[in-house]
Image 1 (cartoon, rainbow, N blue to C red):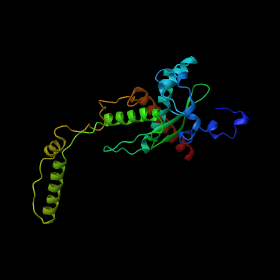
Image 2 (cartoon, one colour):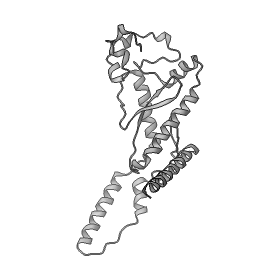
Image 3 (cartoon, one colour):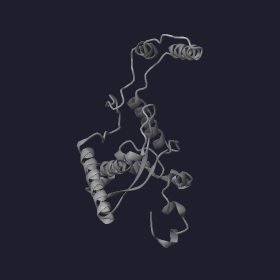
Image 4 (tube, rainbow, N blue to C red):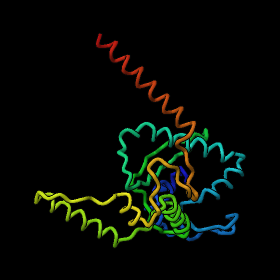
Length: 232
């Protein structure tokens, strides 16, 4: 990046978006010998490990930055959690774009509900493939018997048919049927902590989350009191 006017027509200098930088033919002319520890070509991107190295050179503690990044992400989620409908049968992956200013303070630029998982560089492939693997491990989908699911659906159709005919039909034990479907390996109960999180870091539930939630509820209470006082 530079503000030198002689480069003002070079869009690659000013725009760091990967969808633009991937077309920069100069990306391939980097000196890999200048990159310490397992250098991996990533275009305009670098890994967290390499970022730690660059910050260490400037005597900046990465752990403090990372803690503040996690905190600002947690704050954003607490603000909108009431607007995110919980679905026990699915999950959502968010991508946070974080800007770090001169005071080493993180700011959220945007949050992507469908982050780009395409791989344009070797670094993309390394990080995103690991992300997908860790996500699957975290979800921990259980094996199930499609045959037993088919039998259950047939049974339900028969029950509905007999009920329409005014006939009584004894229902099978649902717990027994679920055990047959999941082969006694039931899915994780909603709210339970996953056993495998890979490179994910759990930021909630936590003490900090409880603090932010308490502050949010207090603010909502003060806001309601203020509105009432204005009406009176």
